[in-house]
Image (cartoon, rainbow, N blue to C red; front, side, top):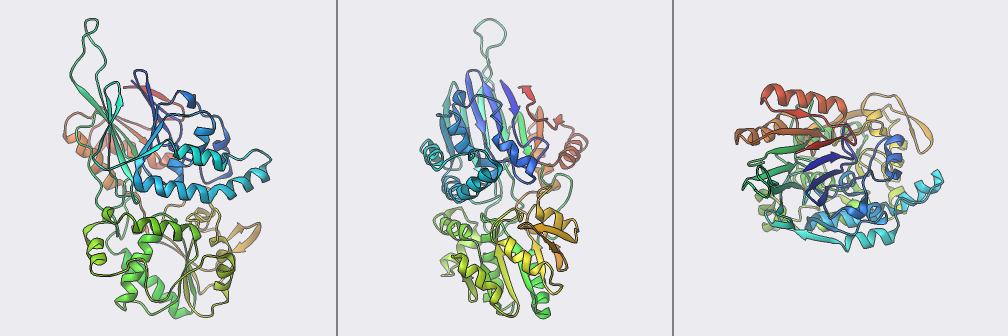
Length: 464
């Protein structure tokens, strides 16, 4: 029984873990590396295992850094089975298809073949099967898997894998003890506007946990909507524009839901709000198909007749022509556009126009990976390169940490601590965080809950 780390180790992206139990080989996540140019070149490296030998892939959620290399895995020979929740499969298929043109363009610029083709994308999802939370999957050889609510984005899951001890003692003798490992995926930052609370790891022997915010506590979790209101109101008074680089999955839907509440209850002046992301528009339609995944407050709003993703003043821009026309709208406005870390998409054109404007504001509502343009702006750079041009940053810059989709240090400690209370926890593997964040959290685990913890290196393997 061996666990090895092929992505998401000492970095926030590229999650990819290989678990070998006897002859069975399964992956948890197969994500893209994102952020800096160096990170993205890692996507073209061969997998450090043979994709043909992988029996199963279990996907925690649809963000590209957890699912984005699935078509490449297929291209390189994988023909096993894929399991994920039904929303995860729907969201992933749409988001990856949307990325195809960008992948081809980047490949053309760099002089190599695209990471994968539309055929690879189509074929890999034919190997996928949707599962429900709490449903037990029999993977053979006594290995079972269960998906639990992670509260991060629609359909996101914590994955529990169980197996029987291998033979011990006399030849052929087996123990009856079941071993359990939990993969956190990305844990949600509770309370969240749309989803339910994440489940806890009951009876874990081993845990692989994310640590995106393992070195800090979020400020303003409970008053994030009020901070959003204040930012918009103050910018409107100055006659400026609020630009929000937003992730197409979850963050966009959360913001639209909360803007709906603020505007319909007249806590904000009527101001044009532009959703300028064709991908986010498509994905919001998926959200409407899975209302049963929402928390009870959202379900109450829906059953009361509220269209939670629509409100007076919301303008949906599908075409690039409609997108360009936004900048001709005089007066204050709010623009939500991708990508969430300013790595591409329509937000770049709005940043070119409004970053130099001292009356405007760029509002970050999610994690900005090291090396990304969003991180440079957030770190205080007064000039950034956008679409090949140097752009001055004269506008205000604000981060609302409460909108982060990731649990903070206290939540992560509480989550791992639940397994420690059960008395079975043997080791914790701290992943999916920049090295400083992972190291700080690893030390906290040792000091606060007295558990053996390690920050794995890329390619490192451990016996379980």
